[in-house]
Amino acid sequence: MAIETSCDDTSVALLEIQADNASGTDHQKLRTNVAYHERITANNTAYNGIHPLVALHSHQTSLGGLVADALAKNNGAKPTFVSATRGPGMRSNLTVGLSLAKGLALAWGVPLLGVHHMQAHALTPRLCSTLESLPDLYQGPWELATLQPSFPYLSVLASGGHTMLVKSTGLTDHQILATTNDIAIGDCIDKAARAILPADAMKPPYGKALEDFAFPNGPADYNYTAPTTRGEELTRRATNWDWSLGVPLAERGRRMAFSFSGLLTSIERLMRQKAQNENVVGTSVSIEERRDLARETLRVCFEHLASRILLYLEDTVGRGADKSALDTTNQTDTIVVSGGVASNRHLRHLLRAMLDARGFSHIKVAFPPPSLCTDNALMIAWAGMEMYTSGYQSTFDITPIRKWSMDQRAEDGGILGAAGWLHNGNMLPAVQKSQAITRS
Ligand code: AMP
Ligand code: ZN
Image 1 (tube, protein in one colour):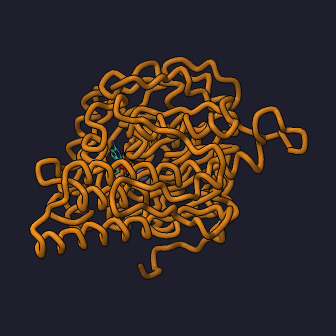
Image 2 (cartoon, rainbow, N blue to C red):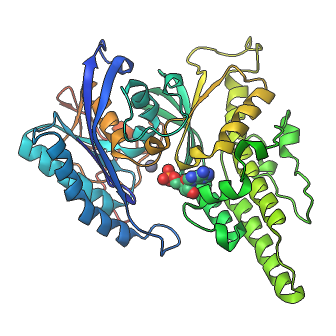
Image 3 (cartoon, rainbow, N blue to C red):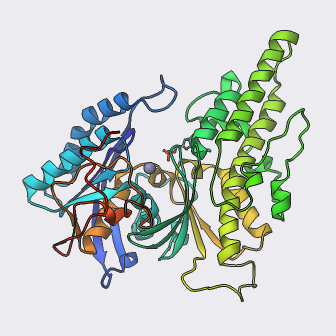
């Protein structure tokens, strides 16, 4: 059984191992089945983002009912162990799920697993490749068969709260290759959508609304040509209007980082100026101009995301057949893209086109189902299961962790740097101090 309460989604899952063909810790040979999986999202529509107290209230009112439903599905039988998200996330929200998980595990006399939320996101493609089916969740043309990432693989997490390029080489080894310097890509797209969309198209989720408005006929509207060189990628594209959008971090060379706040500021400023002109001269921003701005916004965001994947691949894998000078051990041929933004169909098209145009047609791109990309308890169940079957358990004195790197190279020691890990019954030394008494 697993519980997720790190942000605004309250989610509970029961994951069953159906057949265990795995030898040792070869989890890819497991077959799993979703016995129960539900999610309730706090209603934050009145706020410009997530209101912590609204999210907290939602966890407190929703969690008990979801656990009761899950137990009913399991005919009251106790699970083998209980997992809950320990961090990173909002501390009070994490406390709701972690405390209930402790209570359940203590009452049932089963192990407790305090799971790292970002590790769980990074391991999701491995979960997908073991699922027998996705009865309630499977929607759309995702090919689970293409999701067979054994370590190492690259994953891109593009959501409302994160923009990360991660290299996963083992269960607890996830190297952050690039992360955002400022806001997340989903946050940028949501806020840009609010500035760009006409009133009749303005409805949450705004990222989806922006995609639908930009490409009302879907792929038939794309007309996208990928830049064939980095120089071309860094050049502003002219439009039919009196504006063009700059490329984020263009002046910073090959720096492995993302940035979306400058782009958002220029879009918001542009639309504000147009609104002021409208008051003066009585013109309004036409649907055509708004549509072009929507398309350019998505193109610039997605090319920026792709640019850091390309920089990494160029430095490590090498283009096409030219791999002679490179260390080809420990390399990946799969990129997994997840997070809410990954459900954008134009992103799928653009990423493939950019990889092909720059000599990486041999690199596979896989997208897990959207319901498993956004926050969910199934990924917590899976991460807990991989940790548990690899010998890990949590002690019952663990506390929620607000900031917790997934990268063992970080100052806090990453996933295993937190206090409270047992491995094969032995206490692991902690790098980070308990966060129970530190200030937010
Ligand atoms: P998450 O944080 O993983 O729950 O994802 C939520 C984010 O994904 C929000 O910023 C949404 O606007 C964004 N999102 C959802 N659907 C789309 C879409 N079709 N295109 C772009 N962004 C999207
Ligand atoms: Zn998340």
